[in-house]
Amino acid sequence: MKTNRDKETLTLKPRGDLVDSDIVEMRDDLLMHLENNMDASRFVLDVSDIEAVGPLGVNLLIGLFKELTANLKTFEVIEASENFMKAANFFKFTKLFNVKEAGE
Image (cartoon, rainbow, N blue to C red; front, side, top):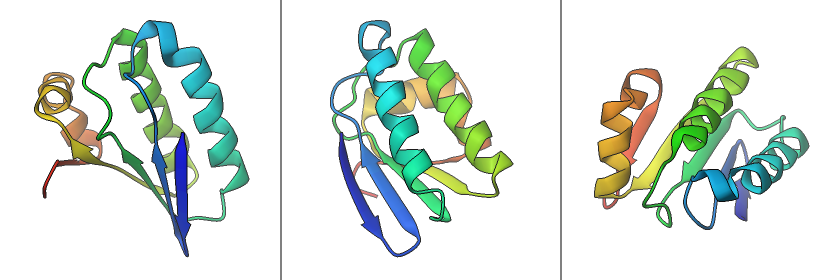
């Protein structure tokens, strides 16, 4: 997972899809980065390398959102592909947090 820290913003870029076979390792990696950067006020998930979102991926995204908002942090998703946007709209992620399509 690529990370970039710029003042108050931590950007995380997972490699691979948010599918059941990869989710445990990805979750642990995300949580480690979040715990090490809780002084950041804004957390951005760059999903440019993600095409598929499985059921556990949906749970992971909702869990991240809940954890961050409980700690008064901002969460957003950027560089969403057309397929990711379909999942985001279907699961109504856009009602919970900001999701920007690739190129926005």
